[in-house]
Length: 258
Image 1 (cartoon, rainbow, N blue to C red):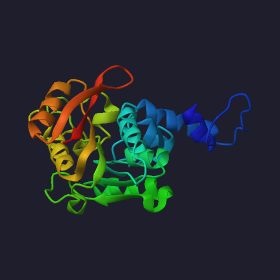
Image 2 (image 1 turned 180 degrees about the vertical axis):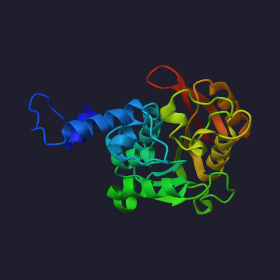
Image 3 (image 1 turned 90 degrees about the vertical axis):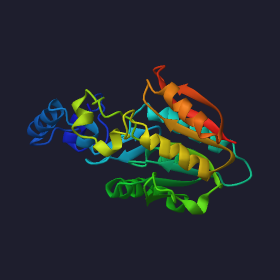
Image 4 (image 1 turned 90 degrees about the horizontal axis):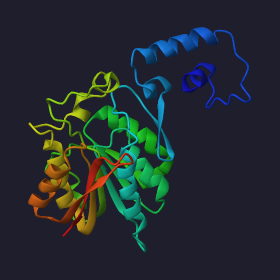
């Protein structure tokens, strides 16, 4: 259906009222099917992906947002919504397409959102995806491992959310859509356990969050205990908890800044 809509040049295909089939449709459709059969991501073929309630532009070279990350975004959204009487400040580290940042800006109109990524291609795409929110959301080029990251916001952030790279070096994803098309820097988190970048996210959260502020960070479904231990050993957070995605798999950690 999605590929047929693409070949027809329409946003959405409704079989009850199909549009006229233009000349060349069969050839265009066959070419699109061949690309998908070669395991090119559907999102790359279509040029967009839906994430919660926002339609995001997607380009090769930038990590494709996943449905399981929607629950991580939901945790940030719920926390931002709970802040009354002032503008909630939300930081999205390792933003990629800007999916989480765009969802927060879309669902919490009172929030101010800053999205950060170390890849220029990702920041460029995130800026495009955040443009609809004007000055309420912006994307910046910066490395989460830098000690001076967003230093001007130290102790001021209400919610720090992240879907960082976390795959260990020996755990190559099985699906060709992932290991052949997603950039390696967005997949592999560094170190023997894949958690070097998540460690940097935790350290950044300790510096940036105000007392009582919330950290919500995605991780692999087998990394829950390890990530909780990282947060606990940091010493700056109270009672980290592992939360599950919609399939019941351990998916992210939440913790409050002391």
